[in-house]
Image (cartoon, rainbow, N blue to C red; front, side, top):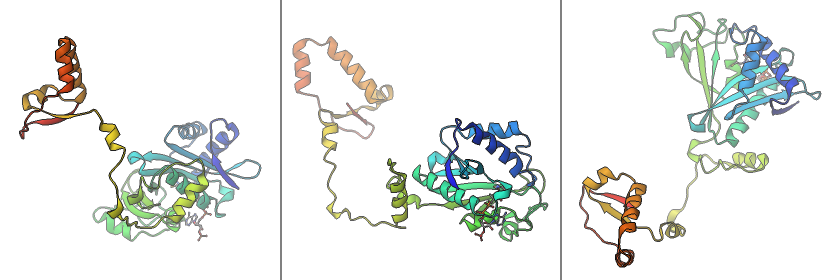
Length: 288
Ligand SMILES: CC(C)(COP(=O)(O)OP(=O)(O)OC[C@H]1O[C@@H](n2cnc3c(N)ncnc32)[C@H](O)[C@@H]1OP(=O)(O)O)[C@@H](O)C(=O)NCCC(=O)NCCS
């Protein structure tokens, strides 16, 4: 078995994945993807940008499972949706492999958290078929798996229950919310660099420490900063002027128009000696 991207060009896999979706959720009480058309639209949606769509295939290229994901919270969090393994391939590690692969995909894209909602629509947990109010969280804390509800599968893979939407799918049919941190968000930006090699990314993740202590005593000022600001000047606009000219661009545009109307000698003087003004608290700085 290997895990690969599901692409629109792979029409056989697209069709098998849609069939898998219809068949895989048929015994969960879900009202989603009752027919092939609905399932095909869901599969096609997964080809959009900012999505993850991966399939587990056997040696002959037949689809054994599918996992999808959507970027949220500016890429910090990814929603895992959906996950399904072919009935005859279950309990053989395909689901686990898909989730672990998904975690790597999310980490490579800079995400640090995966979240998901797992519905209980056929009363297979102790919180299904019940009124969760009042004391929703107490009932959630005491949740029991009555009939192979997948929340336990996710728990085995390190996900925690982080909430519940009571009656999400009708009275007594809650959506159980789960999440997993896949890397320390404090490291974001320092460990999210994309490289041409997925292998290198994974090695970086494996090497990650829970906390990094940097020694700033030998830090030097940014030697490129001077180049960026060379020949630029910060001036202070009086309060009445700064109300009218609210951006660097607008100030520059007006001053350029003014320079164009000035006699040559004055222009040269203006270039040599930029005027300086005193500062008062009701003035704003503008980079010109
Ligand atoms: C949930 C599902 C994806 C699991 O896939 P799978 O390939 O059977 O899972 P794995 O074989 O990788 O199982 C990993 C572990 O979770 C356990 N597990 C799997 N399904 C479980 C379930 N429904 N309840 C409790 N434990 C479960 C396995 O026994 C295994 O435990 P182990 O590590 O102690 O041996 C699959 O049953 C499925 O497609 N279900 C229908 C669709 C669905 O409910 N998707 C999730 C919607 S949020």
